[in-house]
Length: 340
Image (tube, rainbow, N blue to C red; front, side, top):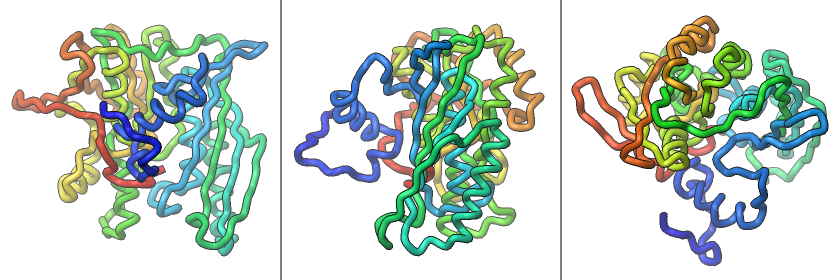
C-alpha cells in the first residue's frame, strides 16, 4: 500500500469511503497520534475495563444526504448505526449520547420529525438517550443537520468476542445486501423506482441475541456499512492472513435491489448496508445459526455465503454458478458518498 504524504495532500471524499484511503488515514494519521491498547482500528467498538466488568464503547457521526429517505432518516440511522457497532463486540447496547450540529434555517418541523425518529429507534433497540449537546452554525456551514452519537454496551455474563476469523469458518450474511446504498442513490437522484427502493436501516441487537446459544462458536461480527461486504471481508482476510471464498449464487439480494444495481452498473458487494451483519463462525454451528436467524423478522433471508481457507492469504474471491471466479478487491474509492 503506497503511503500518503500528509504534508502535501488534503482530505478528500475517498478518505471516508471505508476503502484503501480510509485505512491509510487511520494508519498514518490517527493511530500514530492516538494508538493505545484499547484502540484497535479493525473493530467497530472498543472493549474497556470497568469495575463491574468490561464495557463496549463506540462513537459515530452521521452526515447522510438526503436526510430523509425511504425506510428511514438521519435520526434512525444514527441510533441503529451506533447500536449495531456495539453489537459487533458481543455486548448488549444500553446507553447512547446524542450531539447535534444544526444549521441556521433548518425547519423546526424537520428537527421534530428527526427527534421523533430517534426516539422510536431507541425504543425499538431498547436503549436510552442519556446525554446530549447542541450547536447551531451559520447558514451554509453544514448541510442542515449533522449528528454524533456515542454508545455504551454491557457484556453481562458473556465475554467479548475475539474478532478473529479462523480457517474453516463459515461466513453468514443475515440478509439481503445493498439495500441502503441503492435506496440512498435512488432518493438522492430522484430515480423514481416503483415501488421505491427501501433502506434496510434497523437495530440488530435483537437478531444477534438469538445466537446466544452459539456464542462460543462465533469468531467475528461486523455490520458492512461503508465499502459494503467487500470492505469487511477484505479487512477480515487481511487481518487473519487467510482467504475468503464467496458463493455468489448464495448471496441474498432483494429482486428490486438487484435489478436496480444491474441497471445502474453497481456491484452490491460494495454497496452500503445498515441492517445486516456478517458473521464468521465455526462450520459445525452454521446450520443451527441459520435456523435461529430465520426465526427473526430481520433474519429471514440469512444465508451461508462463503468459507474461510488458508490460501491465497489475505484475499477474497467469489465463484459464480458456472465455476467462474473473480477477485473481490478492497474498495478503492466511493461508489456513493455520504451514505451514513
